[in-house]
Length: 103
Image (cartoon, rainbow, N blue to C red; front, side, top):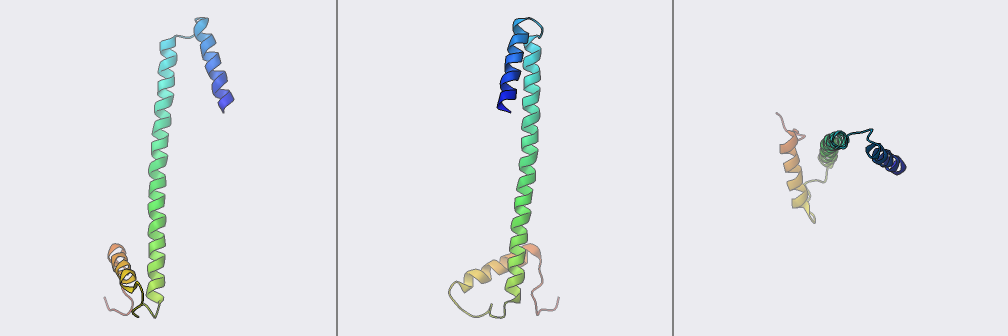
């Protein structure tokens, strides 16, 4: 890819020197290519961010399901309040019904 860029640059320089290409036109084409590349990068970044959020949500939902299956979840232990708080937040976020309740 680097050699392609170098050869394209050399070709462009030679074309300008021999008058085969208008420098303003060449510059405009380069700016258009840069703009397209930036748009594509931004689009990919948005997609990757959505995927990361989705994966995080799946991970949290999986954790919540595992937590709900745990029979010892109500026993007081080290950090139990943090675990309970996390479960409460996830239940609110994902509107997941708590097992054993009638809704």
